Image 1 (tube, rainbow, N blue to C red):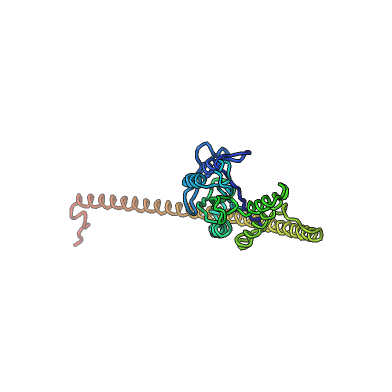
Image 2: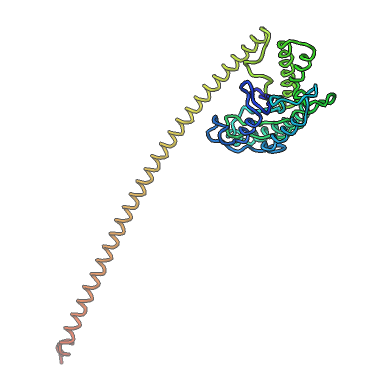
Length: 321
């Protein structure tokens, strides 16, 4: 089975450390000219939920302008204020369009993803679908919210891995400890998504390169994979043999049909030739009969003309007394 794919990333009004700004992220999302060099034939996104992406930036600016951090200070433009979450399917848009069941599955996954994120992170202000890349995928956007205790704007309110790292940071933990907390919670996020969306959709929790199995389980899995590969090879071999037999029999049937068709055509041609010869004989006989009738009519006319020239006695013969 294919693996699920969900990935979250935070963004700020001003890009830093190679990460794009919110304006750049949203420009790429709506396929604004100059922001998608990796997509030669860009298509406008499909809105799945909430607002169009163009309306997100003013909301973020207004929220960041009014907000303060935990110490009451104005927020810098590099403050993470938007969470973007990508959910992708292992199918191309063409595959989904061509398969009714995949279409149903895609709609379910993307709708359930929105429900999951709203329960896990907070209100999804916008969700869009991209159909112009190799795999069909959706972008979900969530605004950083205000902390219930401090009323400070914080990305931790919507992004659990950042919240776990923040707890460790405020407790005096090192960067390594913060990163470890982030990774642990990110794994938990993936697990919860798999329970809610990935597993019901038939996706593995992780791909084959990411799973970590005990040696015994790994060997058993490898043996099972090798057995499956042998079975698949045998099935392919038999399928190829069956296809070859079907192809050969089809060729033989076609050849036999062609021979029969040629024979029928030859017989039909012979029959047509015989019919034509018969018609010619009938026409010739008819012409002969017509000519004979004309000759007899001419002879009869000549006899009548001669009879009219004879004297009555010549016609009746001498009289004997």
